[in-house]
Every structure is written in C-alpha cells, then in structure tokens.
Image 1: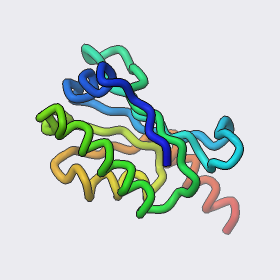
Image 2: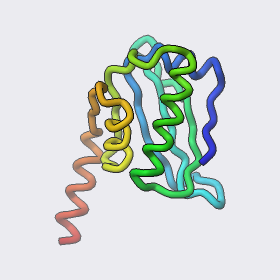
Image 3: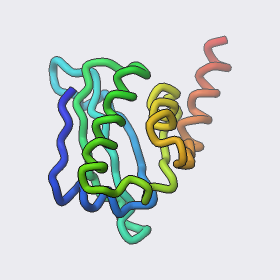
Image 4: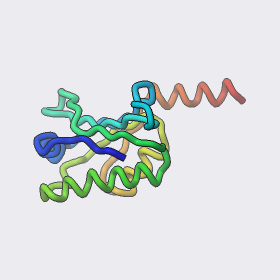
Amino acid sequence: MLIFSSPRQLQLLSNCSHLICDGTFKYAPKGTKQIYRVFGLIRGIHATPLVAVLLKQKSKEVYKKMWQKVKEALLNLVVVDSIQFANFDAEIAAYSSFQDVFPGVAVKLCCFHVKQGLYRKVRDA
C-alpha cells in the first residue's frame, strides 16, 4: 500500500465535513489492483483530490488499514472530528471498514452504483 498526500492536502482534509471516496481499477499501475481516491468537498462545492492510495488487494482488512493510516495522519494535525459525511460507491468492504475507523461519520452510497449492482444481480440470477 502506497499513500500519497501532501501536508497541505491533509490540512484541507482535516477541515472537510464531506468526503467522496472511490476506487478505480481501470488506471491502476502494473502490480497494483486499484487506485483509491479520497476527495474533500471544499467550501461545499469543489471536490478536490486529497488522498490517493495504490492498493494491491481489495479486502475489508486492506481498506481498514488504509483508513487507519489516513486517520493517523489526521490525528497528527489534531483534527479528526470535522468529517460528517462520506459518499461511497456500493463497495461494501470500503465503506464498512470506513465505518469501523470513523464510527461517528454518516455514510451515504451512490444511487447509480447501488442500482447498477442490483441490476447485475438480477441479470445474473
């Protein structure tokens, strides 16, 4: 796992009340499974990339370790409780591990991804 974020990006993240979290498999470099990105909603309207993580696996344990590292970096800034909402696609391991590490944050799922997942389940049944 490789985590990319600058001190300035972490400072911005520490002031965000709303996060948007998503992984992409399409552009993951060779030797990794996905690039996971965390965007912060700056001033309530600008989704700004603040953390990028290269992951070799996608399991709840790996995501939990990732969220723990992000929280640890925020704790170094002495601010963690500014986050109120986090949006996720429908990947259960990603959002459930986030809830384990940030228990007081409301998790919201993307309607498009939830509908897409239901459609695939029905289609493949």
